[in-house]
Structure formats: structure tokens, C-alpha cells
Amino acid sequence: MIEIERKFLVKSEAYKADASSNQLIEQGFLNTDPDRTVRVRVEGDKGFLTIKGRSNKAGTTRFEWEREIALAEAEALLNICEEGVIEKVRYLVPFGAHVFEVDEFNGFNKGLTVAEVELQSESETFEKPAWLGAEVTGEVRYYNSQLSKQPYNTWKL
Picture 1 (cartoon, rainbow, N blue to C red):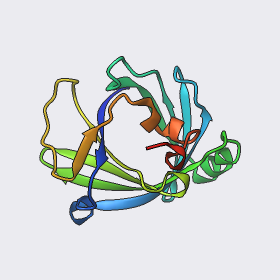
Picture 2 (cartoon, helix red, strand yellow; picture 1 turned 90 degrees about the vertical axis):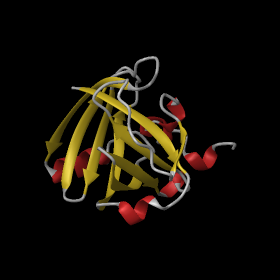
Picture 3 (cartoon, rainbow, N blue to C red; picture 1 turned 180 degrees about the vertical axis):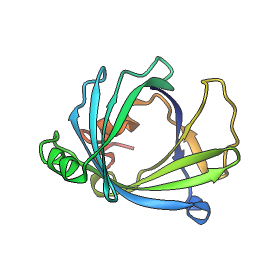
């Protein structure tokens, strides 16, 4: 139940050519407290409830508990989420020994594309595709829970 991941900006759409699949995701937050973020997600015809703990100092590791729930329950829970439901398309992109999850945001976060890679340890090395940009691991403003409150289109770049 410990998640170890690193997050990067994406600098081109070249990942789409290598994507094995893509899926529209709608997600909202029942709680955005950093100690216990509670997320509801609709991904295709499936629903999920996820609880995440506070990240470590580096932003790479945190507690994560996730369970599939009935689609109707997830859709109902989205209706009572905090303001700022997120819509994005997730691309699964195999590269080397890993699969990158590339999220292309829509709505108020349109223009932002980030990639995450899950690791077995914080020190694990991995190949980086050419379309991967700057690392933003641990930068709180890139957390989905924060993007729901401070969308990308409100940032001063």
C-alpha cells in the first residue's frame, strides 16, 4: 500500500505513437487534506475510491489505498465532491522496463500534460523517453488534488 512514483512534464505529443491504450478519466475529491486525500474516479465503465496519505519530503513515496467500487456509486460520489472535478485522458506508454502514465488534462487544466512512472524503490533507475520534460516530483501544485483547487489555467507562468 506504499506508492513510489516520479512525475514529469511532457514536452511533446510523441508519446501518443507508442501508447498501448488511452482512457477518459473523471475524478473528484471528497477531501483534499494532505494527510488523507480521498479521491473518487470514473475510468471508462469502472469506479474507484482512493485514499492517499501525505508524501514524504522528496514527494516520491506515500500511502495509497484503492478499491474498485460500482460505477453508479462513483458517479453519485462525484456529485458531492469538492469543487473542481478533473477531466483528463490517460495514455499508458510502455518504455523500457516501465509503463508511463501520461495524463493530458482537459477543462480548466487544458494545456498541462504530465507523466508518472511507478517504481519499486526510490533509488530505482529507469529509462527516460525523449518526450519527457522537467521533473516535477514533489511539486505540490502538480498534484491532482491541488489542480482541482488551483487549475493550470490560473497559474502565472
